[in-house]
Length: 395
Image 1: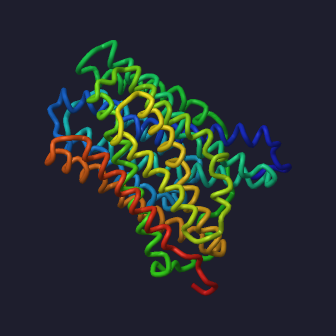
Image 2: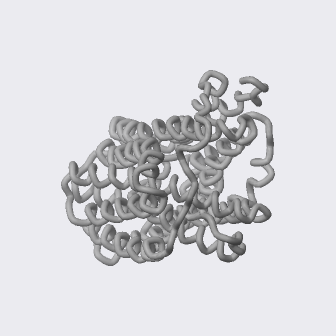
C-alpha cells in the first residue's frame, strides 16, 4: 500500500480489518462452519463418517492447491483481484452447498471453497503485512487484527448454525448454508467496495533455495498438526451432539473456540519470542494436544468448555510459531521459500486427517476414537517440533 504519507494507525487498522473479512468468510465460515452442519447432513443424506470427513479433506486439498497457486494468481490478476476473487469463490461455494445434496457437487463446492480461501487469505495477509509495515511501532498489533479474523467467522457461525437447526428441525442443513451465505455476502461488501492497491512486485527479490533436510523433523511436526487439528475441528460438534448437547451447548462450544482467537497474541507473546529452534511450536502444540484430549476424560459442560478454550487458544498460535521459526532461522530472502514449505507440509496433513479419522471412526464405531487419534497426533507433532534445534549459520 503506497501513499504520499504513511497512513495513521487508525486508518491502517481499518484497512487491515477490511482485508481480514476475506479470512472471516473464507476460513472462519467457509472452512470451519461445515463442522456445525455435518451431523445433520450426515443423518439426512445417510453418509458414513468417512464420507463426511472427505468433504473436509477435499476442502483442505483445495486450500493446498490455492496456496501453491496464489503467487501465480497475483502475477496474472493483481493483488486486489486475487483477494476479492478468492472471497467470491468461497461465497459461491457456500451458496452451492445450500442448493444441492449431491455428494459430487458438494465435493466440488468444498474444493472451490478451499482454493478461494487460500488465495484470499494469503494475498490478503501479504497486503496486511505491507500496511502494518507502514506503522512499524504498531506492526504486531495491526497484524494480529488480520490473523484473528477466522475467529470472528467461527464465532458468528456458532451463533447461527445450531439455533437454525433447532428452529427448523432435522434436515434443515441447507437453510443453515443459506444463512451463512447471506451473512458472508454482507461481510464481503466492504471488502469489495474498499480500494485496495499495492505496487509490490511478487516476482521481485531472490528465489532462495530452501533445504528440507535441516528442518525435516520440524516439517513433520507441522504435518502432524495439520492432520490432528482438523480432525478435532471436523468432528467435535458431532461428538457434543452425540453426548446429548443441544443447540445451546453446540453454540457455546464453537463460540468459545472462536473467542479464543482474540486472546492468543497476549497469551503466547513470550513463548513466540523464544529463539530456541522448535521449542515455541512444541509448547503450543502440547497445549493444543491437551485441549483435544480433555473430552476423553470427562463429558460435563464445564469440562467440554475448558477443552474448547484450551484447544482454541493454542490452535490459533501454531501458525504464528512457524512464522517466527522461519524468521529466527533464515535471512529474509529465504522467508517465502520457507513459508511455502511449511504451507505444503501443513496442507498435506490437513488433507489426510479428516478422511483417515472418519475411516477409523467407521471401523471402530465411536467418535471417541477420533478424539484419541486427534490428541495423539498433536502430541506426536509437539514431540517432533521439540526435537528441532536452532539452525547453525550456513544450514
